[in-house]
Length: 283
Image (tube, rainbow, N blue to C red):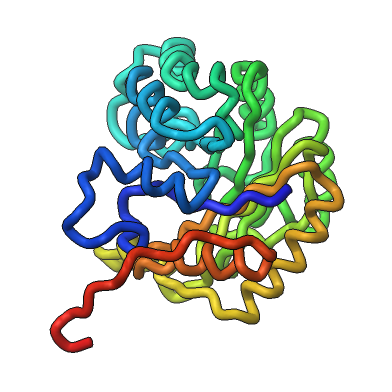
């Protein structure tokens, strides 16, 4: 089974008629178009349990969530940690997502590690510790450092992930130095695999002193040939794992929703049409 969705549901203007949808109603409308979503707001703060309860109640039974791990759990946090120790941080995070787990709508908790998290014994030990803390949860692992998939470490990395029951988060992203990884089309879980489509904006992937870097990093629109190649990749992956969840994250220019719909059509799905587009003055 292949599921297609987007990272977040608030910023995809193509799904909503301009000016006619309240922010609190967007998830309901989003769920008419897609059956899965990535929650990225959980990366920036540990959300309240009642927030996840509301989202669970607003979506149908066959809808599911990929919840991004809090930044303090993946080494991204800058400044003071609001939690006194790791135990309380993990406890708060797990309690916050309990409604998603208990409803059966939790596809995975995504641990995306930063570019400086390289393949080393110390970091392997960190991953073992995280997996132990999250032993009751399905967890997906995404690297942003090429050393994990170097020629002499790739097979060891994949074998470790399989042993520790990490779901592989396969990336389609620019190949722009050590802070990006290749698309390694190998599942590490027989149950599910995650694919995240970050776009291929090579010049914008690394910061390089650009003050607007985060706003333009995912500025990319996949063309039909690229999506067709991924259709074939997904078919091959689905022969090796029960479920494949695809998340489009290329929304700096508002392309994620349309690319997701295009891929769904290539896969023989019949997606809902996008909202009618209002013409701007010079369109």
